[in-house]
Length: 318
Image (tube, rainbow, N blue to C red; front, side, top):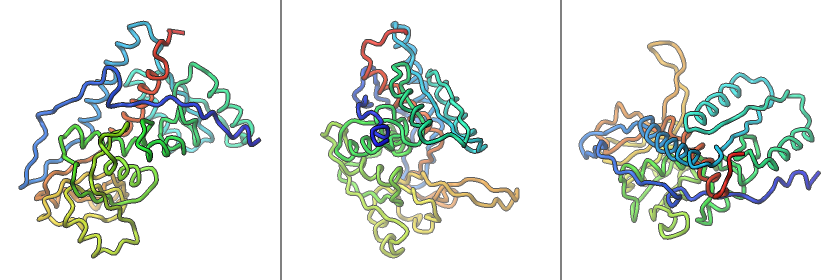
């Protein structure tokens, strides 16, 4: 059984910023003002990146190469899980990736599930896999210990989608990180920690970092201490999933990237709605504000495209 748990350690790494066909983007529509916040739409960025990826992939397929394929293993009949998977397969289709959803009952045994994962792992037609613990090379979510380890060693690998989205926003909007002070509010292993890793590491390494000085805060960081850190910060990444907006004062002139998710009761509709960690409406005097919406979804599948292409330089149609 132990051998069965060792899902292949061979993996195909992508190097997004140095991949063949990657074209850096300079955008003129981003406005940086020290007087009023400009909310940069993650949706607009996601459309931009999605169009790039789709065009690049269609060119790849037109040259006689096989279209990448994603397999999703969905266990049980939880409506939220089905909705989650549906959104992911739709996003994959928008980029040009074929996909399939394999439904299994909640009664499936661990052995049967491992059999299925092993079968998908050995299938050369499957390039990406969405399950709880996918193989390193097909780990579209970027959560496998091998991929996390490579990220911490500044090596090219699959990144978790939300941190990668933060990185892309910073790069594409021209926010300078070299030598800057950054506060990351949140220490989760799939958001806060990877964001901090990307921002503080050496920009000259295989997986270039931001060369920033990064402070990570969490629920036990004293509020007054966090307030002092945010006062000297040039960039604040709010990923705490809590009422972080009280710690950001309008006079700070900070660049703020909000990736937090909170469910609140809307007093006008009486229904719950999702909001971020920062109240941008009440912080118009902030330097630059950024929201991240569907960008992470697009980047998750962009990682699949580049992993597929780099691992299959001469892939055929079959």
